[in-house]
Structure formats: C-alpha cells, structure tokens
Length: 168
Image (cartoon, rainbow, N blue to C red; front, side, top):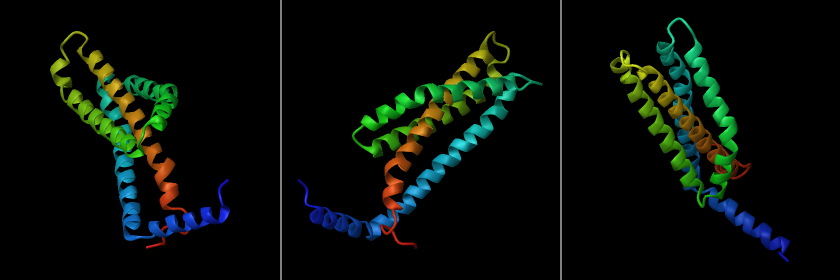
C-alpha cells in the first residue's frame, strides 16, 4: 500500500523541479512547435483546394472531392493511428514522426503541383496528379492530428498545470 504522505512529498518534489528554468523554456518551445505545426497545417488546408481549382476549371468539384476524401480518411483512420501512437514508447517520437510526415507530404504535394503544366496534354495525367495530391492530403491530415494530439495529450496539461509554471 502506498503511503499518502510520501506520495504528496514526491508530488511536491516533482512540482518544484518543474519550476526550474528548463521547464519555463520548455513551455515556449511547446507553444512555438505547436504554433508552427498548426500554421503549416492550416496553410495547407487553405491553399490546396484553391490550387485544385486547376483540375476542374469553372467548378469546385476537385476541391470538394479532395476535402471529402481527406476528412473521411481522418474519420476512418484517425482512431487506429491514435491507438498506435498511444502504444509507442515516446511521445517525442510520435511528435517527430507526425511533424516529419506532415512536412514531407506538403513538400511532395507542392512538387507534384509544379509538374501540372507538364502533364496537361498527357492522357490521365491530371487525374493521376489529383490522386497523388489527395494521398498527400490524407497523410498530411493524419500526421497533423498525430503531432497535435501528442502535444496536447501529455505536455500541455503537465506544463501549464496550475502552480507548475508561473506566469512570465
């Protein structure tokens, strides 16, 4: 049986160690990391549908289809990705993989879009590019959710708990 007084003393020691300078710096790294990830994700969500208008001139069919597919994939695959993330040893690995895949797929989609002019006359070229951009969108959306949830699940409640980090 655990002694309640010993548990409270241990908790006070942990809280005291979190009041140190590294914990205060950690708070700002978390905020910066989370902000950059969110800005990148929102920029992707804003710009990609506008760029997809090239696939269906005069219609919003391509951006609409892209949005439906990427959001549906998040709904379908999100829980299983989250379960796998919970099983990983380190939350830092989850954030690293999520942010890395998110950045890689965004860059890959931009490279694919840059090649749109080269495949305009090719049979099935634009359709293939749309499929590739949609796959990038699916991976980006799942990766963004992975990185964002890993940060908010453990780090934010710990660092911003009342009394742990004083206002700066």
